[in-house]
Length: 362
Picture (cartoon, rainbow, N blue to C red):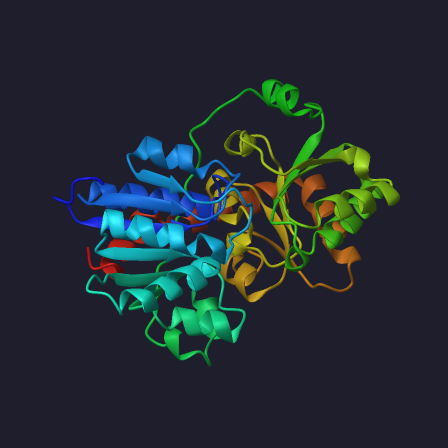
């Protein structure tokens, strides 16, 4: 047990890549530590490398699962860590933690020791069970207005605080040829990037079909897909059947992901993914995007300002607009510049950190 001379803030979260949710957690932990509090992080899934990055910041990190996805079986171990660390505040990060933290909140009310429960949401509750667990929270924090709109019938979100995420560029630099050598890319070709969990809502099947269509117009493009999930092998087989597997590089986990943003020319997102996978990082690095038009992508990119929003149908539109950006350097530069401006104005780190600390009452 650590010293409790300082107030302890605990985050309960999945393990993440260093982009999207993972990046936002790093920024949150660094800001809370800088404000003078102790931070303890409990990872309820594994395999993405978040623990190493958070330990470097000075947080205490516990890993309670070897599963790549969150499972309720970790509840007893998380409860034991809470009893040991005695945090004054527990933050459940993203909706997949709501069942665990909400359940622990109910249990804590029966004991003498209680804590303030904050639930952060980067996506809205998907079921009534999730909404019921979120309702246990003393405060709800959402990453965008679109979540409130999508959940307007759910009372727990009526008093939610909106804390915009922060778009921050990576400082890491590796030469393009070295990156290509380490992960098996062709340094002479154009690179696109998609980061998404390989589940049905990510709709990576649209992406594979789009790759096939793009190859008709451009054969000098390689596609990087980073993500894990139950559809991994099925999607690889589909790429092989459609004869586009030679241009796709699949990674369930990619430690060099922060280094790729200096060399990628286009970000692609065909489905519903928190923060669009890597939209925030693409803004900060001036990389344009092509994405299916959803409430979240529209709020993040604007009205096709930092990228191009396309309808789900016809599916050919996704590939057509992607090729348009890759072939039009003037358009590519314009969208990238607008993305940088949005990173400064809509997703400013200082504003994000300030609103986070204010919502946590720190």
